[in-house]
Image 1 (cartoon, rainbow, N blue to C red):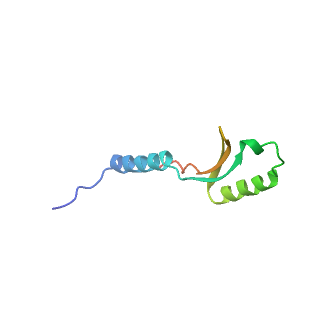
Image 2: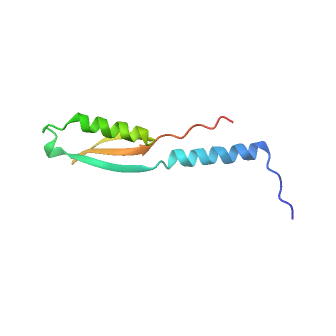
Image 3: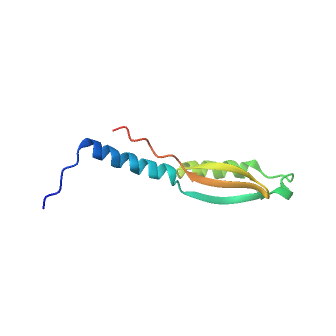
Length: 85
């Protein structure tokens, strides 16, 4: 039994499906949280800067999320490259 050859549209469809999966299911990691009751204390932004730079080098974006109990810092995998082929 011979396997049918894929046409260019089938290759494109597979590539687009894979891209959409990577886009919709991006890896997320919670790094730390600033408690709401301590937000007025002096938090050094230099530490936040260093963590954001490190995240960028590892291929992550940083999200700052306001929650009822404080600020959540979360790393999210960067959007994959769009397949142009």
